[in-house]
Image 1 (cartoon, one colour):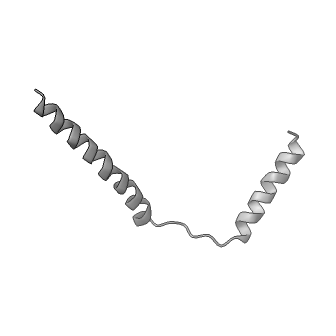
Image 2 (image 1 turned 90 degrees about the vertical axis):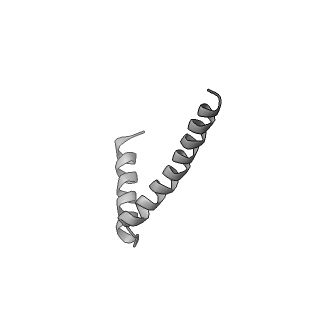
Image 3 (image 1 turned 45 degrees about the vertical axis):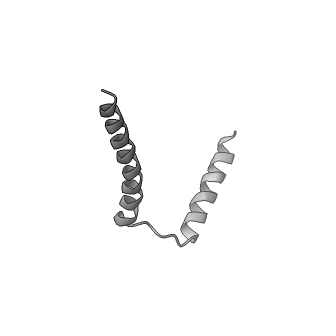
Length: 56
């Protein structure tokens, strides 16, 4: 890959980003996704903890 190709691609990306009207997600939307995944992780941990207690 040549430097000129890389500069052309970078310029294209910057131009397309400046022309596009995008929405920056709020903290609430970001944390909603994180806590949604944590709900499943904690649920699996609880299941494994209780199943380990039953076999002792």
